[in-house]
Image 1: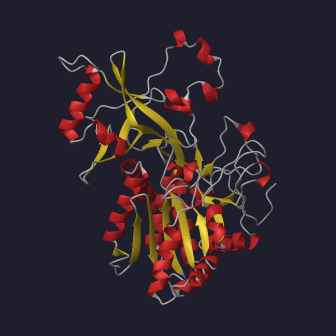
Image 2 (image 1 turned 180 degrees about the horizontal axis):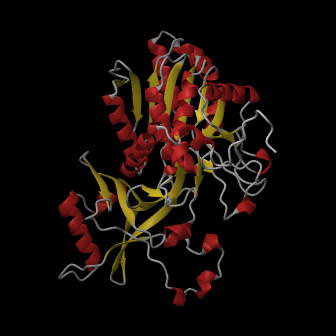
Length: 459
C-alpha cells in the first residue's frame, strides 16, 4: 500500500519520460541528434562538423580567438573547446569529455584484390564489435585519400539513395555446417570481414579486369589511383540515416550512438550553459574504442597542450601551473552504458542495471573483474554531481555494466584521472551497444544534455 502523502516511485524506465515527455525541447533535441549522427559517422567528420558549429557560434582557433571562446582542432582527429567562467583558469575547469570513434571496419593499406570475378576490399575491424553482425549489411565507404601532391579527396559513398552500397557477403546455410558449430566469436573470422567492391570487368583487360575497371572508375570520379590508397583513412560503416524505432517512435536507432550521442549532448550543453562559475571545456576524443592510444586519444597530448596554451596567455605558463589547474579540475566522462535488455536478463544485476528512459546513468566505477583496470569516482565528487543535477530537477540513475565477473569495460575516465582531477562517468543507457545499429531512448537524449549543462553551471 502506498504511504499516505508520499508520491509513488515512477515505474522503471519512466523517470525521464515523467520529466521531459511533454517538453517540446525533447523533440528538437532528438531531431538534432538524428541529423548529427546521420552526417557524422567517423571521428574526422565529427570534428569538422563541431568546428563549423563553433565558428558559427562565435568561437575561434587558438591563433584567432572568438568573442565566445576558443577551440583546437587536433589534427582532424579530436577537438577541444573552452569558454571562460567567473573564476580564473588556474582555479581549474569543468570538463565534459566524449569520444567520436565507434566500432567499424577499416580498409587495409593495400586493400584491393580480385578473386572469382569479384573485387574485394581487405578489411581490418576496429574496436570491440561482434563480427557476425557485420555480414550482409549495407555498408558505406567513408574517409579520406591523401595524395602526395598535398591534396585530399573525401568520400562518403553509399549514403545518397542513388549510391551503390558495399557489403560483406555471408555463406549460404546449405554450406555452413562447420560454421554453425563454431563459437559465436568465431562464426565469422576477422580475415573474412572483406567487402564486395565490384563485379564488372574492363573490356580487353586480361589480368584482374574487375579491379582495373573499378580503379578506372575511382580515377575518373575522384582523381586518385591505387597507390594513393596506401595513404588513406577509409572505413566501412553502416549505410543510411538514423531512424525512429518502435510503434511510438520513442527510441532512436543509429550507427555510432556509442559515443556520438554523448558528443552531441555534451557539445550542445557546452554551447548552452550560462553563468559559468568555472571555465568550461568540451573534448571530443578519438581511439577510445581501442584503449585511447594514438594522436587523438585521451592518453595523447591534446588536453595538456590546450590548457597549457591558455594558461600561458594568462601569465601562468609553468608546468606547475598546468598541473595545479588539472588537479583542481572536475570532469565528466560522457559515455554510454548498456541498458537492461529483457531478452538477456541473466547478464545483468537487476538491482544495479540502468534502464532506458530513466535518465543518464552515473557509473561510479568502471573496469572489470575485481574492479581491475578501473576508474572509481570519489564519493564526495559523486555527491557534488548529484547536487548539481538534482538542483535542476534532472533525472538520473546509477548503474553498473553487468554482473560481477560477467564482463566489463573502460572509458576515458581513468586517463583523465591520472592528472589528479575528479572524474565520473555519466551517460545514457543504450540497447545493442557496439552493434551496427544502437538504440537510445528519446527521453534520455534531453535528460543527458540537461545533465551535462547542470554540471557546467553548478556552484
